[in-house]
Image (cartoon, rainbow, N blue to C red; front, side):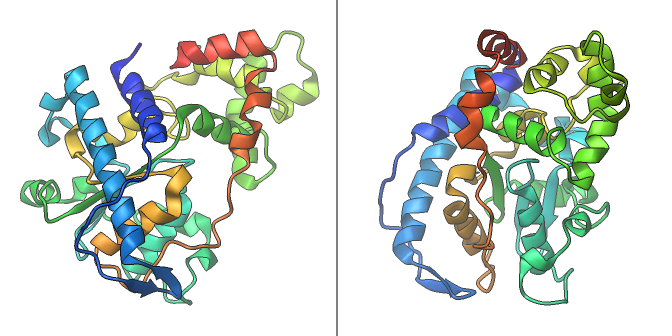
Length: 309
C-alpha cells in the first residue's frame, strides 16, 4: 500500500476517533457576521485541534516521512496551497471537502469580491478560476520559510476517504450539473468504452450512467485513471498527496464533520474578526448513502476499494 495513501487513511480515521476536551486557552468572545463565536467553543475546538496535530505528527514519524522538507516539493505539489500574506494564512484546499465555500471566504478575506457580504453569492466558477489566489510557489524562498513558522496559520480540512470518494462519484459522474456533464463526457465515456462489454451506443456517447462499481474499477486500473500522468485527478487523489502534511505541519487540522467549528478557529487565528464560514453551507447526504453504494455489488466493490487504498 502506498505510504501517502495509508497516511491519508490513518489521519482521517484517527480524527474520527478524537473526542471533545476542554482547556483554558487565551481566546476572547467574538461575534462574526451575527454568528456567536464563544471563547468556550474556540477553546474546545483548539484542544481537539491540538490532539489532531499530535496524531498527524506521530503518523509522519511512523512512516518516516518527517524528513522531507519544503525544498523537496515541486510546484505541482504546492498547487493546492493558497497563501494570504496579509493575514498570514495558508489554506490547502481539498476537492470535495468544502473547498468551493472556503475559496469564496478567501475571496472576501483578500478583497477580491465587492458585490456584497455573503460569500455564497460568489459564483463557484469564479472562486475556482485560474490566477485568483497566490499559491505557495509564488512566494520567494524566504517567504515560503516564513509560512512554516509560528507566525502563520496553516489550515487543512480532511474528510473520511471513502466518503470523499463517493462524494466525487456522485458529483462528477452521477449528477447533471455542468461540471458533471464535463466529467461524464471525458471520464464517463472512457469508463464505459474500456470497462463495459456490450455497452449501448447511448452510453458510449454520453457516459452518464457509470455505476459506482465501474468507477472503482477505473480507479484501480492505473493505465486508465492515470493515463499520461503520474497522479489521479484532484477530485479523487488522496489528501496526503495534495497537501503533504508531513512537510507543511498544519497547525489547524479541520474535519468535514466539524466544518463550522474548525473554520471558525482558522479564521479567528488568522485575525479575520469580521468574517465567518457561511452557515448556509448545505450539509452533504453522502454519508447516509455510504452503505448503499459500497454494498452493491457488495463484495466486488468493497474489494476494489481496498485495492485503491
